[in-house]
Length: 55
Image (cartoon, rainbow, N blue to C red; front, side):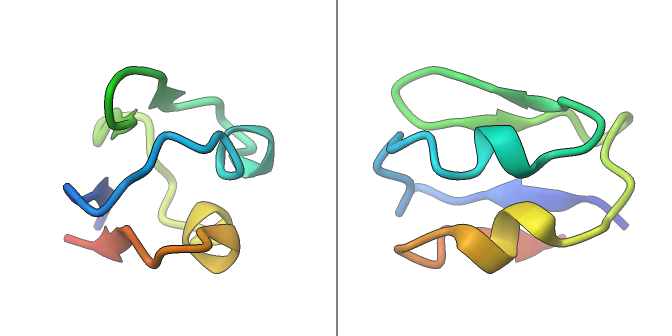
């Protein structure tokens, strides 16, 4: 099961360096490529606004 970035995302960039498979894309809010996500939860653990959730 992949993680998803919700509309609570502030595009702060904290999650980007945490992803071991580099499946997070930048934008107004960030997006996780569900096909590449390995569900490690590293991004969710560092998100300061709890915008990353398991799908």
